[in-house]
Length: 109
Image 1: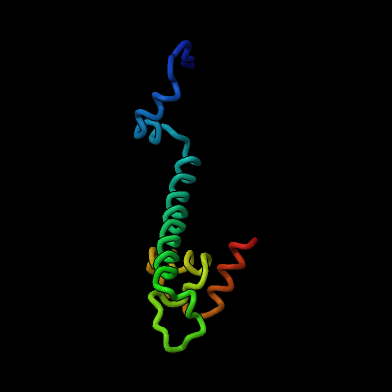
Image 2 (image 1 turned 120 degrees about the horizontal axis):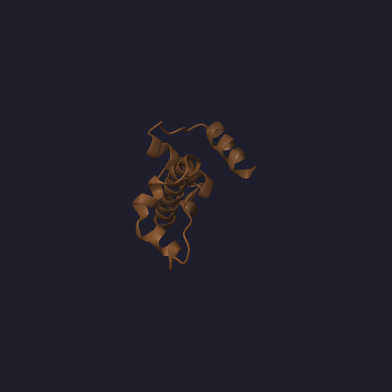
């Protein structure tokens, strides 16, 4: 067993060589980092889509039938996350209220 003693700035050495640190991590941390990168990306793009919808004024014209929204079926952050997930996984856009309801149910619990 190797024991490091009197190594100055030991934690900074791990950060400075990020690739080796990631390679030497345990597998469960690899899986967590892998899944977290997807979730962070979905949330980040959901914020972008919600900002686009807000800037276009779609949230103020939800009941207006003559208004053409910039992004269809994005009303709040939950629907923006669903739209982001559907876009990035290319599974198609669910226009049924059941998909939005199930996704909200999963996020609220």
